[in-house]
Every structure is written in C-alpha cells, then in structure tokens.
Length: 133
Image 1 (cartoon, rainbow, N blue to C red):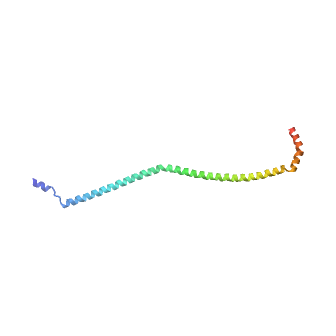
Image 2 (cartoon, helix red, strand yellow):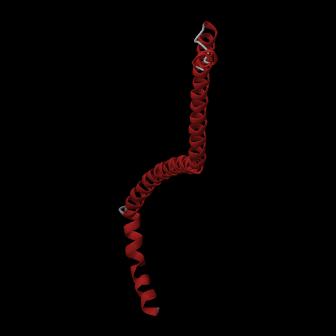
Image 3 (cartoon, rainbow, N blue to C red):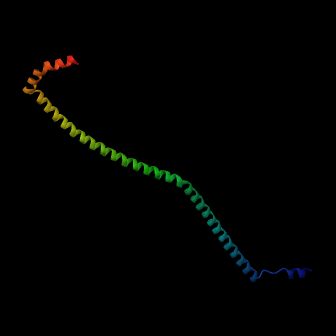
C-alpha cells in the first residue's frame, strides 16, 4: 500500500511550479487591481463629499456676493450724495458772497445822507401809523 500512496501523490515537478508562479502573479495582479478600485472608490467618495460641501456653500457664497453688490451700490450712492453735497456747498458759498455784497450795498444806502434825511423827515408819520394800529 505504501507503494500506491507514493504513486498517487504527485511529485513537485516543473509544471506545477510554473502554474503556482502563474497563479501567484495573477493573485498579485488581482490584489493590485483591488487596490486601484479601492483608491478610485475613495476618490469618488471624496469628490462626492466635496461636491456636497460646495453645493451647501453655494447659498452662502451667493449671499456674500449679494452683500458685496449691495456694498458697492451703497458706495456708489454715497459718492453721488457727497458730490451733490459738494455742489450744494459751492452754491451756498456763491450765495453767501452775493448776500455779503448785497448787505454791503444796504449798509452803504443806510449810511448815505439822503437815507438819513428821508428817515428823519418820515419819522413823525411812522409814529402816527404805530399809534393808529
């Protein structure tokens, strides 16, 4: 019986070591492919997480952009208001100069001899008018 058991056990030969080597290579190739697929899966997951985060940030970014547009509009309005104020100040200065010139003319009239004489002549009439009121 020991003779038959030795005959049924295949002896390691060149054919089986080649097949073992080939299977080992296939196993390593399959493991490498699995690692590539796992890496691709992780990259896809990271991309999905990033896209979801970006999608959730979109309303925030839109609000910030709207706020920035509002600030720009406010600045434009503010600058236009300042320009209007500067124009009004320039007009006021012109009117003030005109007013000063007119006051000088009035002062010149009141200090003239004809004005003083007319005022003195009409003083009794003014007093009578006040009494009658």
